[in-house]
Image (cartoon, rainbow, N blue to C red; front, side):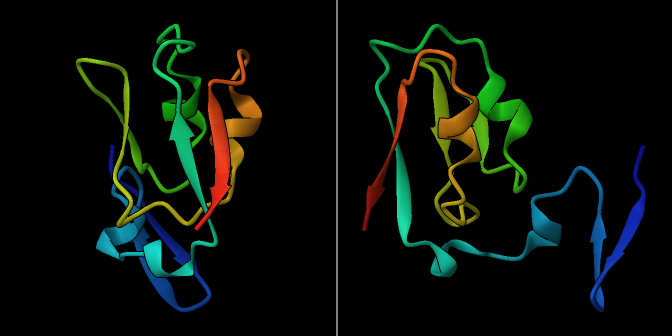
Length: 87
């Protein structure tokens, strides 16, 4: 189901990656995933506000064009498999 969301003059469509806007230039920290620790619970995929994390064959994959480095993925990871590293 697609729903338009008005946010400070921007029109975003629910379910799209920030309406196609690249936000990676805002990032100060980059998430690094330790795939050996990761159990594929996919909480990072669920909680990412920019939908920058997707399910990959090996584990979570981050599209850095859409990642703004907020750290929500690292905060929600129950096994601390995601570390935020300063760029």
